[in-house]
Length: 242
Image (cartoon, rainbow, N blue to C red; front, side):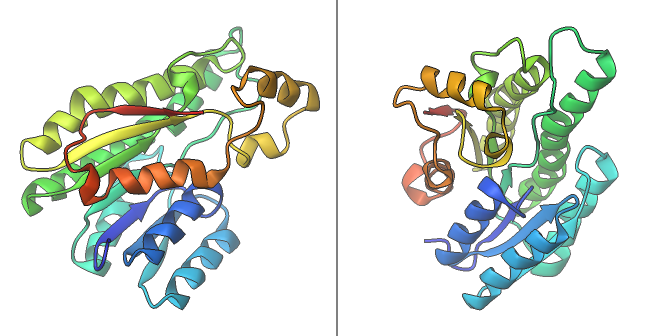
C-alpha cells in the first residue's frame, strides 16, 4: 500500500507514534521517527522496522523549538531524498493542567502540543510544494472538541491543531495536490492513562460510550487509512475516535 513511500512520525518512540510507525513499515514504507528523550524506545522501533526490510532512522528533537523541527524534516529529506507523509503525533498532557495555573504552564503546553505541529508542518509543506505532493495527518484530541477544566491549555492547543489542519494546511496542500486531516481520539490505553489516578480513570471510563479505553490500533488504523489512496478524496476533516 505504501511501497517506497517515506513517512515521518513525530513522537515515534512509544504509544500511538510507535504503533503508527510500525504499521506504515508493515505496509511497505520507509519510516523516520523523532523522539525527545526515549532513546531506547526509539532504537527499538527503528530495529523493528529494519527487521521488516524497510529503512528507518531516529531523530532526537524537541519539536517545540523551531530549529529542531527544521532539523527533523531536513534530516529525513537528506537521508531518503524525499518525504511523502508527515504524522504529527508528538505532544503530551502536562500534569495539573488546571484553569487556575500560572500562564507559564499553559505556554509550555501550547508549545508542545500546537507550536510543534505548526513548525514541523511548515518545513514539510515547503518541501511538499516543491515535490508537488504530500500528506499530513495531525493527532489532535477529543479535548480539542469538548475541552475540560482540568486540561484547559491542552484542550486549547489541540483545538488549535484541528483549526490549523482544516483552515490552513488542507488548503495549502490541496493547491498542489496534497491534503491534510486530523484525528481526535478519546482516552487511549497508553501514555498518561497508564498511570492516571484511579479516581480520574474511573470517571473517564464512565463518560466513554463503551466504558473502555481506546486501544492504540483503533487510532493508528484511522491515521494510516487517511494517508492511503482510498482516502484521496478526504481533505480538511477531523475524525473523532471513541
